[in-house]
Image (cartoon, rainbow over all chains, first blue to last red; front, side):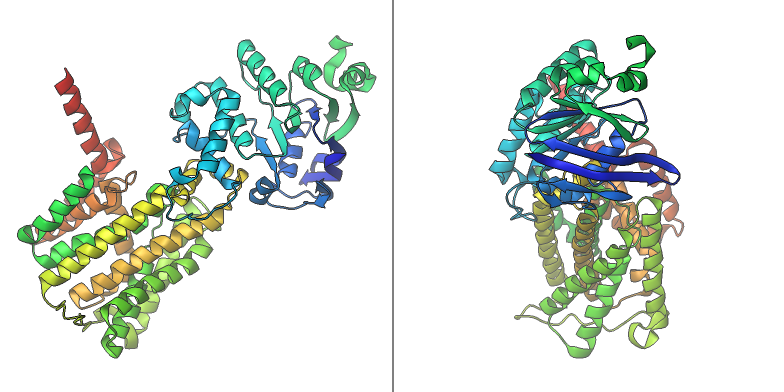
Length: 249
Length: 307
């Protein structure tokens, strides 16, 4: 069953149609990748799904409910969490605080918001520690985010999304700018999360995509040009032309 | 703990060093600074219009004290209410914008309130201010005695400090700092950023209102400057000198600012020049203000001891 759907979703910035008539179905529990050359509209699609801005036309349906036009801060509460392509953390905060803020946001209760000590929310703290532990950063829980390496910041980026206890995880190039070894760790991490969450993954590194995805959608100039399981996509001549280029063929 | 002990000692010693009125003014200004710093230091919002809330509260509570003889606690309650309400109004408009536009809006709305006070002479007294504000006796406490009033102000200051401490250590404090650190991400993880900024405004306004009423009762008058941009600038200035990164920064800033302005203004009429130099030094070399200098000296001393 589709947990997240888009119906003829479009977004234009002036004359530029960044996303054109995209109809997509993400099956619950699957890992669905979105690939395409730079500027194909993948990140714009994520921004639409998470409510960063409203679509020009079309609809977004999550768990059977129409959530089109819901602002970003509400979308997080519905159970969609994203990580960003460019590292987007709270630099002066410790790693634990970085994830705690996300865990608290979607926590069960905001009671005592103004006067209870923020260390007195065992549920949020527990969830925050679990998220750090998932990405392997728990030993550095009390280090400031600006003091860790780029690779670790990418892991933290993911941990912030996990801390919200989402149903759908939208990952925007989690391996961007990582060394080969860090990339291997990130792939292992994504593999570990697969099955626990419904994951939508944007990625450039084609070998990662082929090895982890259940389904792949290919975007080109804002439109979907193909969709299917990895083997099928690899054979699709149109995809080869648009994305893999002449060399791969 | 060390900070609290220092503050308690200062409260006890201060009336022996300066006139009780000046001593009271220091703690009142510190309450004002605590409110501003929730915006400036914790949320990262530079409000150049804090005197809007300070002045409005002073005028409304002053008017009621003068004409209806309300009691002191009622006056303080009114002040907190007016401060919070005016901050809700002003904040609602300001949080729609960010950066420079936000700062200009706080400033412009401050000017609007200033000119209302300036023109509405039948109530505010315009340029002459609103004189004749009493300090009525309450439960046998004679607030006309400067030392009794000083003790009263000190207790309210400690209460404000306690409250502000609870607020900055609460989830709200974390969320406001998260907004300061990265607004976009704070929104993405599920916080309605404008709503939280507005909440910070209202809390800051309530503190400003409390300070405004105490100020009006202290001097028996609400001068027109109490709602002017100069006053808004002073509290920003004092907070930056003290250190906006810390809960105690505005308190130290208030100390330095009020004390300097009182002691230097009789000696040298051009004393603000000194303040200007101090400000330049702080901005260039010690962005964390006096608190940062203090921490550095402390770290240096303990490293010496270890060596």
